[in-house]
Image 1: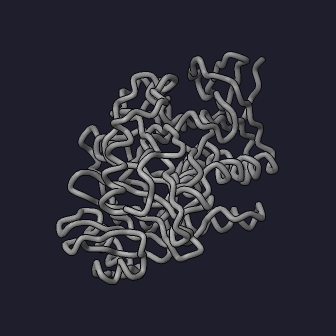
Image 2: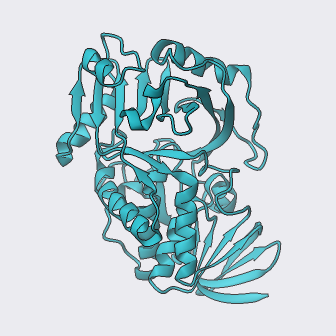
Image 3: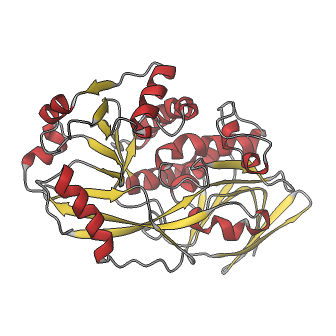
Length: 384
């Protein structure tokens, strides 16, 4: 069966769901194609929570996008009558040469964002379940917090469908081809045609964009929930999200939300995934040992053996920045990739950006530094 659409979105996880919504709310006839179910746990947009923050240590150029993202998250909450963003705050702790601490302070200075600098003693008083060595520097952002990740995906999709979007789940894309001004997508269940194609396929992006040879690699990331019985772990006890930038790695986590456990993971490291359909979803002793060592030093009141776990996949670029661009040969094909590790908070604004590019051919948002051209030497990361 051939059906003609204004836009087709391939992959409707975090970024695809945001793109689907912004296309549909602007009146486009849009089809989303997802190989799994809505808010599935097979890729990168699951695991209950994601950190959201504005004082962005990865690069200050992200901050204008974050201002817009915050606005759009609140707008989506109002439209769907649900709470998605929880402003519990976030502290970032690191040694004297911590890039995360320095980058946070730099972004805050450039964009005049409120960030507190705390001594280890002050931090220990405010956040008593953590341990801060005397050489540590700590910054705290009150406007940061966490997003309910699966609920965010579902909210975008539900809102998109209310605006007329159509979603096909359980359909795996076999191929896409361009014929003149039309893009044809073939799945295991049908053939669809559209004036525009947007690929937001997470770990499967390299396969769907194989002709571009994008510098993407996928890594396996275990996420664990450890027992935490002290009520001071609760968000209601003013316990924030956290990020430790240590010599041995970067670790992050969240306050207790279920009355039993805290979610903790390592941001650095990770084993390469050859086939994103078959990552190793088992939890191994080596996965637990690094997290247990971190907990012993910095969160000693938490248990050392996880109550449960999940396996996520990061899809990464060499410089850690995202890819938002057009296909160099087919200007009506757009893609967003390489988001994993710090991307989910941007799913509102970059969904809007991809809709802008598809429908208007341009966007007012400053995304030049995210162009794929930086890898051919024409646009350096951080430009614009």
